[in-house]
Image 1 (cartoon, rainbow, N blue to C red):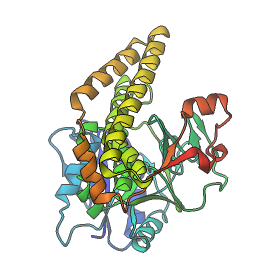
Image 2: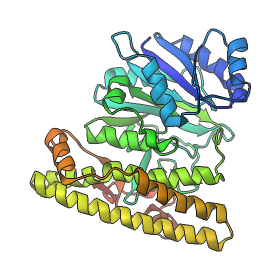
Image 3: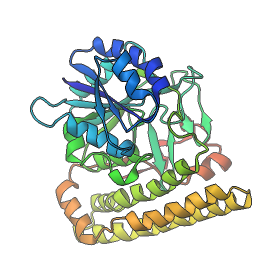
Length: 374
């Protein structure tokens, strides 16, 4: 098996029935591609559907819900890491519809671009097939405070796909709804950060890839169609909690290294770059927590107490789960990777204000000069 196409399923028997047949047909046309379903202790009829309707598909059964991060880490471990292990892992949601020709362009891109650690197709809406889908569109970026946006989706505005993003592009992150990852890179990085459980984990993974010199690319000759909200609806306070908490965890994982890398590239010594990068990251994370506090106050004033509690809980758990980095940690990173690493795709400003007051409601209105170069 060259490419393991893995669905992580949790209580989505309807999506398995609807979309798995098309996925199997498409993968049958690509040499070395196999579909695997990893089940996160579903309590609906998912396992019965797999046993009775898709007995030919390998199904991994987990004893409890390990979340998106733990589930995929476990699934990829079970697929092995020896000489017969897959070269590529492909994470794909159960609520994705694929055309017949979606997979081969991704495999070909990875085969011909050894510097690429991960790639993804364009993500379209299943309900409005000519429009990009919110969760990843044509590749993602973040602003200086960690707020994500995409080519094709800035804040709540989603664009129609008129071919404006039909060139392959290196991006800051690509959606975990459908993401091909070089298995050796995935294992080297330790996989997805298990603390996240779900949400933001793919952004963190892509950021860590860039910090170690790998590229993340959107391959627009491949397009898939995403229903969205298949597991947690957008209005879920639990989803809100995960997004706020995990955003802080992501910044804590990567921001100090990124600042230190940029300072080192500008000529600062390893020691000074590490120390200054750590201080800058600390100040920015504190600012992000203040912004979160303001949004929590808005939830409270607009009579959304569950959302307010979600933000408060997110900050509490972040403080419990954060891994404190030291100058020594950052210095060690610079000694190992500073010569080969480059991080692109962090917007210099706050995308919320830029989209509301500066007319930057679509990605095409943002200049390349508006991004940091680390």
